[in-house]
Amino acid sequence: MTRLHHLALGTRDVSTLARFYCDALELCELVRHAFPDGALRSIWLALGDSVLMIEHTEDSPPHVTGIGAGFFLLAFAVTPDDRMRLEAKLEAQGSSIESRTEWTSYARDPDGNRIALSAYPLETSARR
Image 1 (cartoon, rainbow, N blue to C red):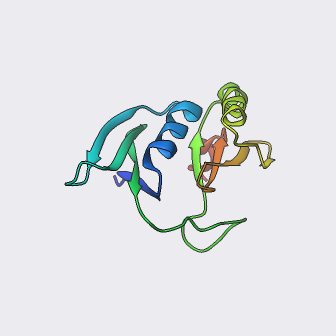
Image 2: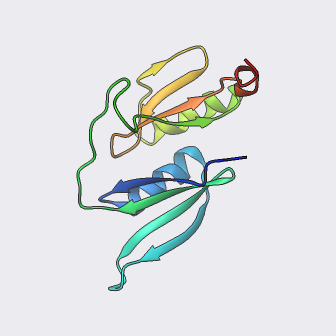
């Protein structure tokens, strides 16, 4: 069975973006990597059985609205109760909820990447 190994997000500010995901979405730091000069290169965060790699780049993040070509959303599976609790944490971190559906709440991380808290029951849809 194929499963997700990792996702990687490039950012100019690795520590700020990693801290956001740790504080707002309760991901745990696994490891830090440095460049040969000692500067922070990346922080890897536990994401279930996968890893969210926050990697340094000098590029500016693209602004995505709606459904775009390529990567356009990072959705986190949550329970309905956790959805409301994590919404409050997102807003406390300065990330307002942009929209909501019956199952999902949408916001942005500090770099403007679209993120979602989704309580959609995937096990039901996978059987269809």
